[in-house]
Length: 226
Image (cartoon, rainbow, N blue to C red):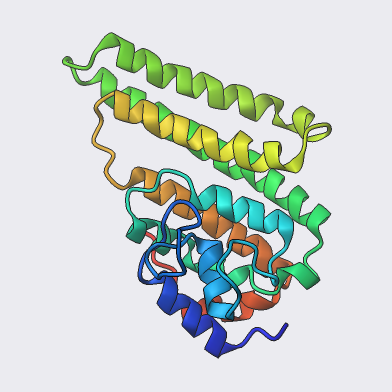
């Protein structure tokens, strides 16, 4: 299909109303997931299977969309560039190579970031005399979980499905680390959204490197990441 500036502009207008977790009951901006927003922009029936998006990439986008962002606005801000970059991937994306690059990115970049974040949580918690011992223990458990994932991910990738390797295996562990930080009563307002936004932008850059048609228009949504 033809990915035009007009389509991308319309999609951005829909996304600007906010993105919800889940499909949404009607095609109403502000109550849609990211893939339903694409369907609406394309004039397709209400749903979450836009014809122009690779099935693998669609699954990843839905998983990221439905994670626990702090608000509809934060979800929209974090996913709007990826919403554009995915356009046209159904006809052009080498899904096997995409899988390999996402897994490599997750292992080499995302998991180490999550480990470092958890380490900072523990360091902060240990400086607070009022922090319960069990909260610190929870943060340490998060670090151990991420370290174990990082050390064993390469072996897992050879025999588990791409969904387990990329979505459930990585994104869920990011959330686990952040939840441990919350349990430790550490002030982390915005950290969850920022980490998920960074992960989403990493996927954007993979798609850029693979010349997916929608990536020609990502500059219509300037990167906003503190």
